[in-house]
Image (cartoon, rainbow, N blue to C red; front, side, top):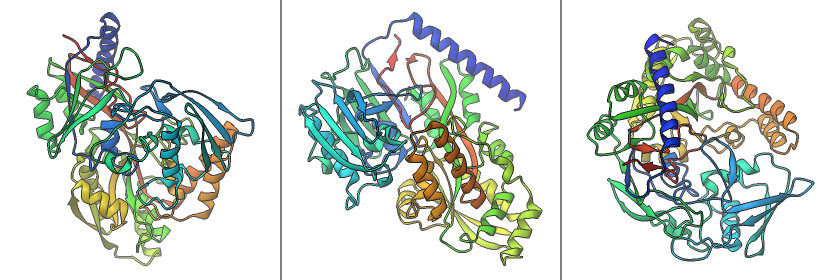
Length: 502
């Protein structure tokens, strides 16, 4: 790490300590409006039918809640379920629900809403559900009474609580799913007020929220400012109060020089990868994918795209995950070996391809530009195509219409996506699928760790994607903003405990 980076790191640590001391010394203040600058506009507001992370950033824990949820430290804690029992065989979960909970439309929350939501999620004919793999082991959902739900699994699933804590698993009011996309109704501390297309979403305090004492804010406004310089300028001009995901580390350095602002640096679950269409020639050839892996210089990408911030990864697992195995050694930067592998695969002169980059994310664009330069050195000529986020979701995520792209996968512990042959990587490896099946079905933590280590090795060996780095969480905000999450163990801009000092 360069000296300047060390300096920023130490400053961030000081700021974090100072923030913690300030929050301890001061009592939270009620009232006020928080304005958060977002990197784009969500395609909808229902996280159960769309995988876009920006939806969860707005609604997770703010507007919608699940039976359980992630807290700011990454721990799974009670949500709409205040407690639960697990059968001896690990297949039956009995959730005891909070009483007196209301949806934002005044409708009482009951076990019937849980059954409705999870029955939709596990329905194989539900074409709106994007992550069906999270629910495939749910055999039945039974409302024992108004405040008790029994979920029976067809097999032991070690990921069940993780899956129930995800944004995909928030509970909807029964029979109202079509309305959720644009006029969402949840049980969270804030309720939906308005969505001004192209500008902002406003959430307001839900006065009948069942947890006492929170939220502190009267209103939270999530402003869409896709252009990064414009978003940064808005913070400096006091037009917004916080940027919850600073797009570039060098911007964090700039913000840190402003006495009106503070910067925090934490950890995230954002695995940044060069996603590869494994079903499309020439990427369906493992030798080509391994050649690309050797052509990638992770340190050059981290230095060039992230100003030196970020941790190299060699498979699809965050270093903060207890099951993480460092496999970066498998593909050291070796252009000569890359050229040899390409020749073995029948491409001695390389080939042409297109890398489609979501223009909304500067880290994606800059990483893609560096990769393009690195690949050119081994004969792979990439044409860069910048596309809007909505097009990325439709063309790449939904229809796998791409060769290569660069994106951060921010879901916690999501290695299981590679077990789905229809996922946009189009990776189909029965051995990997079996390993994941066994890992999910194991009740032994030691066995789980061993199997997840094998799963990581398989992905690295197959060079399914270009595994680049784990993104840091860099947050910039006005000095008056208190209680914002430092780490991002989940996709959330949770403002439940955020307050503004007077």
